[in-house]
Amino acid sequence: MTSLTPTRPWSHALRVRWTNARDRLLTAAQLSRAGRTPYTVIHRDGLVQVRHYARQGGAATTPLVLVAPLAVNMLIYDLFPERSLIQYFTAAGRDVYLIDWGRPGRRHNHYDLACYVLDLLPPCLAAVRQHAGQRALDLHGWSMGGHFILCYAGLGRDADLRRLVILGTSIDSHASGTLGQIARNLHQGALWLQSRAGIDTARWPQRWFYSPGWRNSLNFKLTTPRASLRAYVDLLRHLDDRAYIIEHATYGAFLDHMVAYPGGVAKDMFLGAWLSNSFRHGRLRLRDQDVDFRRIRQPLLVMAGAEDSMASAAAVGALMSLTASVEQRFVVVPGGHMGILAGREAVQTAWATTLAWLQS
Image 1 (cartoon, rainbow, N blue to C red):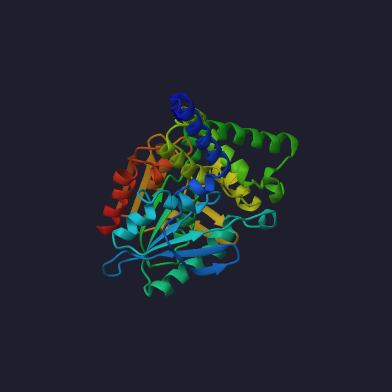
Image 2 (cartoon, helix red, strand yellow; image 1 turned 135 degrees about the vertical axis):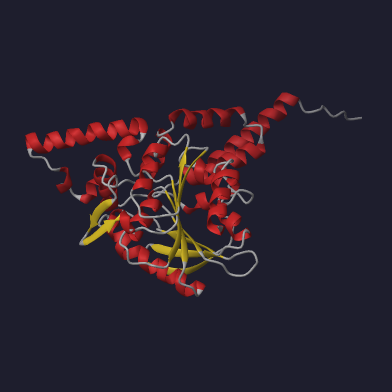
């Protein structure tokens, strides 16, 4: 008679942890739950495409256009099936359109801020209008996506923008805590180099500013180094928890696979928006076009994250005195730069606030 020896508990636990660690390291893409919502592509223009996520019922209302920032991949808007910004708004009866700027390489270093605002964004909005069959649009911009919207609206040419939502967009970069202090110091250093040594950083070639996706991922994590380190420590502590491994892999699908900044726009944002604080007065020149935030008269909702080290409440809130919007609201919500868009509390805070604003 053969006796069976029961598996030792410690050996089973070790096997589970080893399996989870292996899967997280080698097959993270299969574990991720991000990007599950179906969509159709209604417009392509080189790198750029516009996605349409159909509303889940009800009569058509004003389309909501999500103007994404650069460097991020689009999974952030559809991170979990139960916590997807896209599904939240389509469930509320909104047709959602997402502008995906694609994955630029070094051959796109000539893409500067003017290129995105003047050349790429207008055809995307025209495609949305044609597909939706109506002129009025609500625009939602997170981070640099907010800069794109403000520059476009500040041209004063589009009278059919209905409402604008600006989220985590730094306007007064020098007011943004430690990063703001660094920007002020570097700006003073650049002025000293120009006056004493004749070195004009504005003349530096665009290719010097190209930033690959891996570097953007690293920089994003280093803005909150303690939280980033804690996430990896927590991963080791929870290797026996399959649900935790899946959630970690889902976040990693966004954080570990960011997209490159073309040299031109990186130069504009680094030297202009960050060091020189060019957005602070609400006026700038893009190619031969004048942008003036005083031309913005649409109802305006502006939100900042209470723990956002990249765009503090003071840096974001500086926008409120620069536009001509009669109806405007500034709200500080819980979360850091990513958390205000896709964090656990975002559903009840930023998303709910946005939906109520759009429906008012």
